[in-house]
Structure formats: C-alpha cells, structure tokens
Length: 183
Image 1 (cartoon, rainbow, N blue to C red):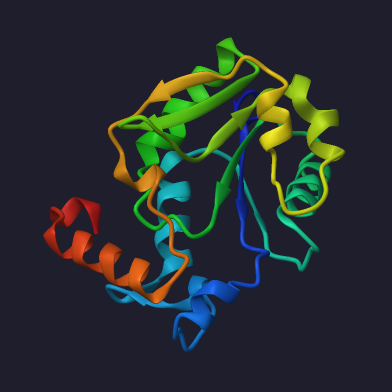
Image 2: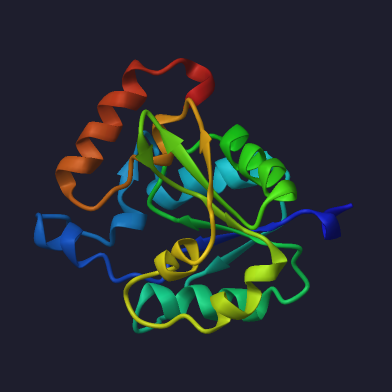
C-alpha cells in the first residue's frame, strides 16, 4: 500500500546560520523544545502520519539541491511532500491531508489563514522538474509552473518554522498552551 502514497521528504540539510546568529548555542534542529529537539518534534508528526519518509540531512549548497538529491534517493516514490525539518508544530493530519489532495492534482500547497505553508505536495509528473532544482530557491519554480491547488488547513504548524531563538521561544509558549495531545 505504501507504494501508492507519496513520500515525505524532511529537509534537514540547512546550516541554520540565522539561528546561531540570533544567539542559538546549537543548530536549530538540535535546539531543545519541551524535552525534545526541534527535529524530533517534526519527525514525530511525520511518523504519526503513516506516510513513507526520507530524511535528507546531507550537506548541499542550497535547498533546491537538497530537494533534488532527496527525490533522486526516493525514485520509487509516488509523489513527494516537501517538509522543512524546522516545523515542530506540524500536525500528522496535515501531512495526510496534503497526501490525499495530491491524488487529484500535480501540486498541493497548504494554506493557513491565507498564508502558504508546508508541506508542499508534488505528484509524479513533477519528478524531472524537482530533479533539475538547484540553488537556494527551493521548489518555487516548480510550484509556479503549475496551477497549484491551495488546501486550507487549520494547522498553525504548517506556517510556524524556527529560524531564530525568538521563533523557538514563540513555539515553546504555543506548546505550553497546547493540549497534551499536541505535545
């Protein structure tokens, strides 16, 4: 059954320079948040989705290069959900919703209260365009080449990333106020 599902690509290749420049003592993905690392929170949501996944944590010159490398390594996938690893509030249900929507279109972009977020879903027809990516722009060019389906989600986590120490503190406050199920 997994062969019919898209693979979640967790992008963990970035250097996290904005986080350390803002006073972070470690890489942002290793920063502690309610007893776990930022990466562990993201991975928990991915595992909870039941979707196949690939963690891309090798060093690459830019996000486009990371995406291309991950798509190459998951050539058997039936589409891809591109998820930056610094989204610790993302909900498993958001991943499965994007995966389900991807069955009817080439590109799915989740939207939370008018703001585009992640994971962005890409069908098999986008494979070559994803493999051709390079540089820092990620997959924006691929999204722009399609009529992307905007999928409204009630998930603040799809737009809440960690770039600075202040971002980490905001997420920690959100987790403190959250229900135990979100922790």
